Length: 186
Image 1: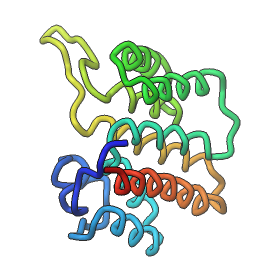
Image 2: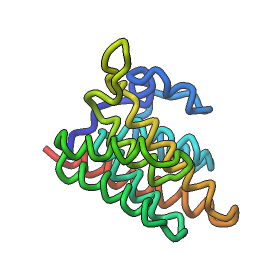
Image 3: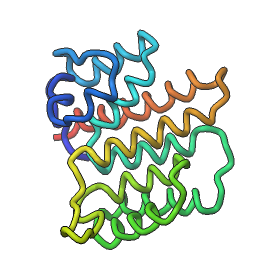
């Protein structure tokens, strides 16, 4: 696991220009784990999972998005299982061949699935994501976080309303476990 990269919630938002649009709550000087816990304690679950997507390192964000996509209680279609498998293969072996496989899968499937967005999170982890007449398009620094966030929120939308709090709490707990492993590593 990579070490926790940010000392405060404000630093996280400062590092990713689009993050400020994804959170309704203003970032504070709290450490990231405390900030997530305070968001969850105030039932600001969407902000908490959005923040999780940005604070986690790329590999952990992809893993987290896959776990959340699997946790919504819905049966996965074969292409969704394959998408999650492709994303998780990149997490286990973060090499270009696996990223390219996730990119191919993520660009050829429909965009309305949490699993496909989790796959895209792996695909957008770096390198070239598209070739245009003007040249190659490189992944933006926040692309993995934005795709992971989309995966989690799309999966949440498929959960019955009475189960959404439980779903969000699961995703937040998974994020916190990943972050606490980061804090404990030397």
